[in-house]
Length: 203
Image (cartoon, rainbow, N blue to C red; front, top):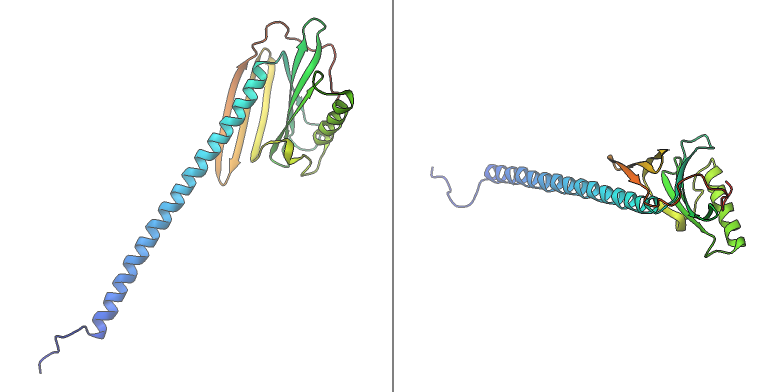
């Protein structure tokens, strides 16, 4: 009996379908793996970039200050506050103060400014209350989005013991990616580097 050479047998079709399925599965796997790898690399770059932007912002503020101090936590969490002063060098009184407040429970850094030249006494008092409430809060979601400087913060600290040399450390963590930065900052203002005679804000 002669075999029919026209077309494909059922077995051949099944084999062809199986091979096609294997090839498609392989293609999908490689495309998916490549997409995940690209996404992870993009997240890593974004986190590194964000950390560097935040550190640059902190550096610029500390550079122009007259005095800086790190204030230890007053809550059950490992919070920290970096407070930078700008002086009237004639009277040795603080005329402007800037605050970086790290809240461990929220994994956030908040940023505040108080300026006696551009704020009324009532505005300074209101800002003082806001800063104190955030700093002393032992809960979560304590700060305003308007004051938020940075998310995904796992650690923030500063060594001010060698003033005017200030060493700042920042740790960000997002989606299994971690970035650690450390910056040594030398305060530029040589006119006056000491504890202020008076402060604008009492925390």
